[in-house]
Image (cartoon, rainbow, N blue to C red; front, side, top):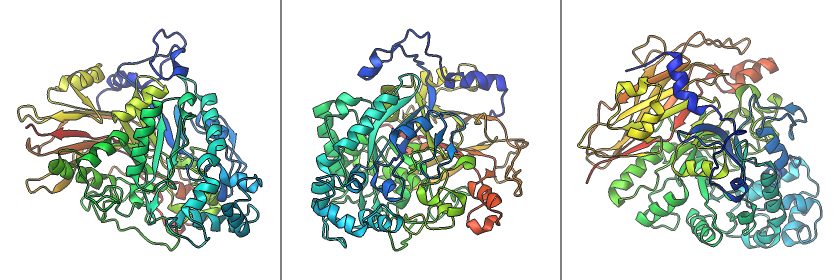
Length: 630
């Protein structure tokens, strides 16, 4: 196993992730119309671009009802670009430590912009059945009344009359459909204003927010096309249907009609109450090959980490994984404090394994997903750094608020996790190039740090390949990157080249792990975690890296761990007849969780937060799948 090779070699390996100057480029990227007229640098070996596909503004009903009506698309874009902004939640100045490369403003399609219009007494909104009832409950935009409206909208089942005396038909007629046009156009125009091909990408999108029986089945939807296409439709919402199969049908029909190339991303499977990766569909029928193919057409990736917790796995599901209990969010979207059952298929690793089982039964894998992170921030700011965390929304924006309920189920502020973003390996920072990377699953998730990660699988790699300065070229030439597929090749075990470099401004690395899932001879899925590269001189992964965090100051040192780790790894348990997937998890050394920094600021014991003082931040690659030959 190679590890800790010279910094010079790693610098050469990762040179392809350094952003390219576009000013003198003669290469034109084939993208949407707004990008066609701009000379944009393009790197065939790809560079990593960092972004957030899940940002909300005051056009989302819940952001407005949480008390943040002044959160605008402009603030979201300016913040993501690295500019200093005035926080819509606290009024304080806020700024990222370094800019993002792209963002999706994903406001809820349900009632998009309508709450603001209601409080502005807009005719056709405020004087409808829904408007009159809502203004009766909350005549002014004040906290108590708006929280009641939020609970009604977020928790009630609108297929029958609910406590407000309203139905889904009332909401669609009064606050939905064409009534959301103005807000949708506002979001489109803001995206066009801030989209700068090659420099900063603003992708047009929204969130479809199904809460079937309080199960989170939400999807983020975006596309690489611009305003000419986006203005041809109104976003599909869960008021139209809360069944994801109906969403896929709409995506199919709208794509055919308009030319939109949609990408849909499920989020928070950890609180889906067993419905995100089902064997039985919402219509009561079993998952079949048609379902599998349709889902994979539109949903190439899943959100594995975000503010409402980490969805990789759970100790109840992965008892032999010592790092399974990470930012576990033990709540559901219910007003009564219901806790989700972790033994259900609510976590991504379980979903990936269930997909392998269904592949052997159906011939198609409905859960063949790339892995991403994003924020789900409801502040208009993608502020998820532990030392710069802006909270989920208005109710937990300040340290002194985080011991109180957030307004989301029974969770409190410190129950939120400061995460995450997505790293995308793309030829250029343009709408089309980024969307294409999502479709081929060449993406990975981070809980915060911008760790650079390369992951290739193939049958003919050599130790010389990973030690050379053209490792990336060899990876593409002789194998497949993260998100790719390996087919049986004379029963030969595949090899994997993995290289990770720390965030230049962050903590050293503890280890690289490979998580394998496979289907045994009885058709049952299994999992195993391999330590494939360890920092320092450790040879046993059970030996912890140590912890340098000072609990009095919240500071740490990089006196342990390594700045980079690289390895060539071959599965010692490979069976050519077994369907399998492999993904990489890279862990940092322990660093302070924001709850420790809050406790220091507030002068309290960190134990009062009910969360650990330190965490090991991480990145997750998209898997590489192995399929036996016929």
